[in-house]
Image (cartoon, rainbow over all chains, first blue to last red; front, side, top):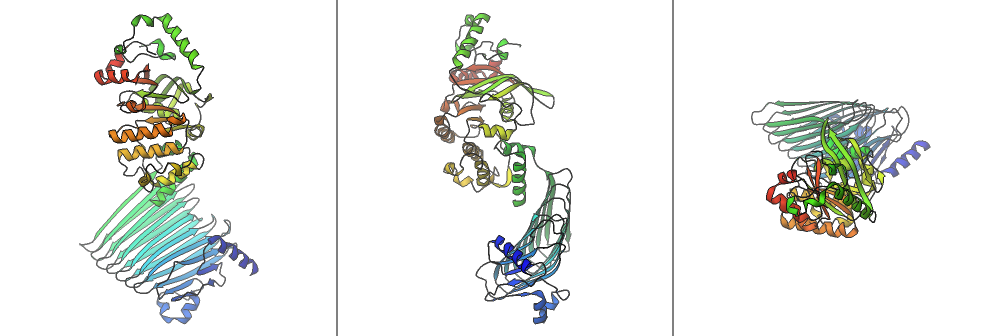
Length: 313
Length: 283
């Protein structure tokens, strides 16, 4: 326990910011008390609030429950780390934002060493009540022996808004993501998924359901295939009412051993809906590379700058 | 036409309108003049020396036995019609791997840089302002300047020139003038010893051209930085008054002339066709 605590302290310091929910391996998390915001381990929330049972698919083993009841004064931070070898995390996270509140959430999931061969499985549910707004920056950083399976569902009530940025800073051995966003009347979603994959097999699935009138959503994917990576991205927009949606999927291959498959899918069930997509996979332009090299950058530095620009764009 | 001067240091005249005497260019005089120039050059520090450079791309010969010397603090111009090889020469000096040097060599500060990578050439002090710089999506100009200034120069001290460009992505939706200012800013950040300006005057109105010329004078010429001005129209020569003006046609430098006005006058009046017909060496 002492060792875990030390590792936790080190990891905590690395974050340079106070964390409201911090879980390391499967140990009891450190939780901050905030006025108007209830943060609990999911297991405890299941016992305390019976209404959570409709969101958790089964009794949670670990993970967080965050219930935002009053307007937070600052951004919320969560961090879930793996610190030891062969750890399996089975998380069930639930975030509920009450009506008309604006919340910013910074969530990090990571390993503290690159060779831990951990398994991180998450089932997350994010419920945005009427008129609420969530900006969620979700950062993942893994080692090349880890298996990562995040499965997130966003449910947006009337006039709710989500700006979700999922960024993979360091890719695992296997990544399987599922993201389902359901939008009700006049709600909107801006989903950005970016990652630079090296020695990774990645299967990325998103589905945006435009369920009610006036819903709108954009899904943007920026995927970089580096050495020995195989990426498949299946992106879907389903319009069930008069609504608007757009898919923007772009891949960049920077190594001959990399492979990217982009599969955009549009399903329209309402004649007044407008859904579009664009998809492309390319390589780094020789001209851009030459240009940056005439600015004194070596080949690696120039490629890094182009890749970072691609992921930011 | 296998003209002897093409293989040596001495070049051909702007044209007959230069008013030089044909009799002074017999073989004997020609060789003596060449020696005189060589002797005079000993007193200067030669920064860039291009010797008998032959360059091709995909098997097609583009540059044919180019000889070009630029001294420290000197400003030279390179004029020529479209597709004459001017920009190719600029790219070759910077080491663009797209172009293959089949013969000849390039020296910078007495160091043979013919096989050096572009970034190493830049670190030695060569900078290029591109004619048509590519778009770098997602990278702000301020970011690029910071990257550049990591190994040389300081980005911040040149920021006064074009502050509004800094937070925009490099060359994305830049106007012609903005591209030129962005290039100038990057070049200044590199704190170079030699700058090649590839068509810095194209797409600039007279006011903007005057501003760009003033910056070049203040930030480069005043600091004894050498300059090679590649230009199609020659407008910028009136502002910067080069020491030597070279004319390139079909991959060959066919003329070197001290008086840029003579070259401009001829080109304006007769076009580059006249230069092709001209058979007299100058300088």
